[in-house]
Image 1 (cartoon, one colour):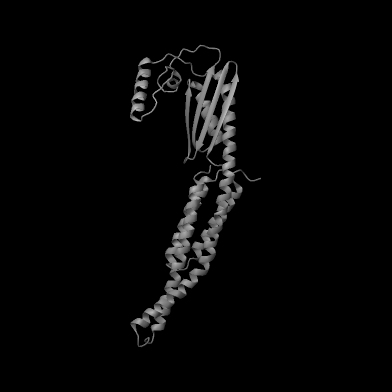
Image 2 (spheres, helix red, strand yellow):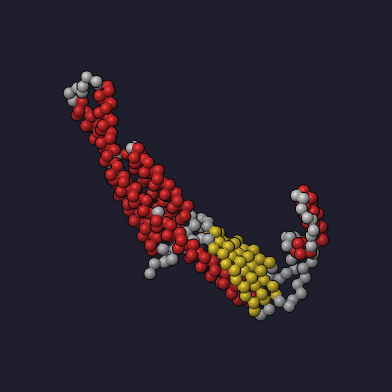
Length: 296
């Protein structure tokens, strides 16, 4: 059975309540070269933060992951003093901004409650190992939602990437025809040039010289090896998409190899028809690179 292809984009929320503790977790995931986990929590997660990071890294593998954890001990009157000076400065700043932007400057206590720094949370106790059991339930719920969204997005990406292999195969097919024709066009250009230089006719041995030059051009323009390698890379690309799993970096590597072979083919043939096809093929590779940047 083939493995699922996953995107790095996802969002999930989770809630849990038990033993006097209420927890809410939000997880946001976007693409990244590796795995980066950033955790925000009030109160502090304390010793349980390592458990959370281990849980995230084991299941989400790759991406920039933002985790927001908020927990409240029910029934406890947690001291959370107001920083009066910070509140006054916040109100003054908001009112000055309201005047500058010609806005209604009506403010309420609710507005102040969401401004960072107005309340002193230093007295809040960090989470304990015993409380991790409840936090873990909310985290697991959020991760499951992220994983599902990643699967859905990954399925869409896989379909797009699979379709993009078709124009690359057409490039190989067309270039296999155009490359030999390019040699004949080069022969004709050389003959026309010689006719311009020697309007009275070619000298004995000129035809032999012309054929030697054409042979050199044909040798230089032989792109069979490049097209064979490109065909092999496309087959690996299709196989990786079919197999699934963590293929983002492999597809990225193959896209670089696509460009290498396409550029070399265009350079060696130095023919307008091949170059035009190469430009279109390179645009396809750029699309592949854009899409695979979101794959796990």
